[in-house]
Image 1 (tube, rainbow, N blue to C red):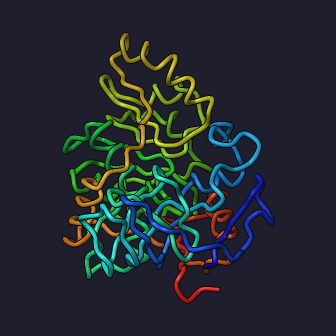
Image 2 (image 1 turned 180 degrees about the horizontal axis):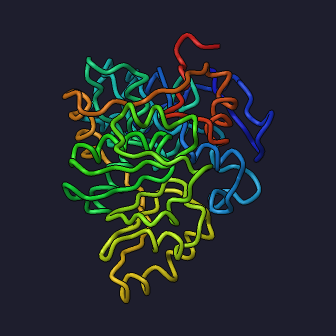
Length: 325
């Protein structure tokens, strides 16, 4: 089979389209013929080996030779102990917790990582949902405790997580402010943002506006900066950001939360089929839809990852594996 493989960290000329053996599913796995895979920020981090946390599984060389976590495809074979899926099922899921390997024509996946794809959803739409959609849902609902009528700010709203978060927040009838670059504001307005802020022109932490919940997809500042944009009893939830901010939240966040009644924390990603199923139902009901910016072939996976990693993506970036070179 064809797969995009790499054996060292970097940004250019690292991934190579190679012929590798088709994997054989273990007793609790299924073999999936991949139709589409979406790109996530973790692909960019693992490709570069940055930040340092991305090297925890492989200090000097990558732990996984094939990247790609959000897949959609068709079950080709099943292991002896698989009960919920069968050959021919159309499936999708986030496989980041059980091995990666999506940028390939086939991948073996634990059965519990996959959900059945409905007929009304394309493979590309299905691949766009698992990680970004679940992060947005868990950040707002589970960690953020979103309530109807709240004033919510999404920082970095124009990417995959942000565009899902905006749609979910509007389902809660929240007043949503979205922050991103100039070129992404039109998309955010079209998705229902009540207010948009161009971060190149305005600093949302200095304009005097206060929010009940801040969902931060691209955290780069000090927690003290974010704190001043929160209402009393407000919450700040970091979904993505720098190691510096992570350390601040881990060591200083609990103290601030205890003494100032402002909760500051980090979302720990927890892939699960229950949340995937919930998002699937919202999609089928026409309440959310993935925003797909660009589509690439399998051989263009490195270009796709770099496009997202450099901050250009408006929504999701998809690699279409079937019929791609």
